[in-house]
Amino acid sequence: MTNLFIAVTLTFWFALYVYMPILTPYIEGLGASLSLVGVILGSYGFMQMLIRIPLGIYSDQIGKRKIFVVLGVACAAASCIGLGMATNPWLALVFRGLAGAAVATWVVFTVMYASFYPAERSGKAMAVIMFYSSLGQLAATTLGGIAADTLGYRAPFVLGGAVGLAGVILSARIKETPVQKQPLQLRSLLQVGLDPKLLRVGVLALLVQAISFATIYGFNQSYAVSIGASDQQLTLLMLISSLAIALASRASDLAAERIGERRMLVISFIIMMLASASVPYTSSMFVLYITQAVNGLGRGLSYPVLLSLSIKTVAPDKRSTAMGFFQALYGVGMTIGPMLAGLVSDLFGMGMGYLSIAFLAIIGCLVVVGWPRAQQAAKIEV
Image (tube, rainbow, N blue to C red; front, side, top):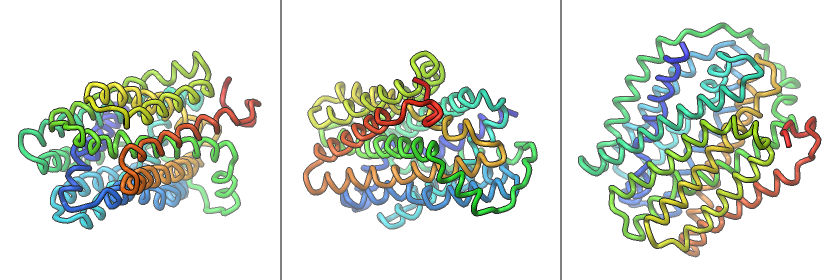
């Protein structure tokens, strides 16, 4: 069953990322300004922010996971096809928002996959599922870039739609273990959602996602075009970033055990800060490749650890709720990161947009350093 679930995960992320190498120039080609591009990119996180908490609560309440996995893959396929058919920025906004609705179901994906492991191995489970999600993104961006280069900018959307539809068929074959239904109790929900440990981890994830969706999945392609990148170089840029994320995600669990989760998070934010701040001083694609490989390394090391911490101390029957709150928080980051970078870039130039994102990484580093060192307060090993 785990192999089938991994196959579905691969198709899910493939449909969502196959067009990422050309998304920002594609939207600009529809007539969008940099500010509007930022809004369209931010709609992806905005929809997740709206949907994830009620989805997680409802999943726990009815004790079901599979139906949301199937719906998530279906929405991923529909959003990919719709973006490919868009004729103006406003349609792109609608279908990019639908992609965000699809990713909101990642709440259930992660919780369902974690249920295949003992509770004490949640870190391992998150590292594995994040590795395969990154692998799906890696395959998507590579093949999508090749398709765009050889067949035109709409080809990746056709490819992603076909793979997404195949994923819907596969997801229907998943078998789930019933979870005990939970009555809707406001006090219990507030206890989960307002837990200080969950909020701390969620704020850090918010910052990680803001950085990533403003750079790797946001304006990197536009910046690369501004320094003369070809379509092949755009594909390679996304490929390098995705490969770094995949490899770092796979190693994150082991790295956290070796040096401690807290230290690793500090190092990750420092890495992302340096990578983002260096972009405005880059005029060579070779150097840009290096900076974004480093950026991907920071994201890949930090995100699985934060994902694991969000459910490590939560009872199984409340994990979808906890994950919903956590992922809704980082959905805010997916929204504000691209919007901040787009607004600042329109006003002061793209260089200042990247420096504003580097500042977010500095904030993340300070948040981790400022946490109480008592393990019972932060549940992060030193």
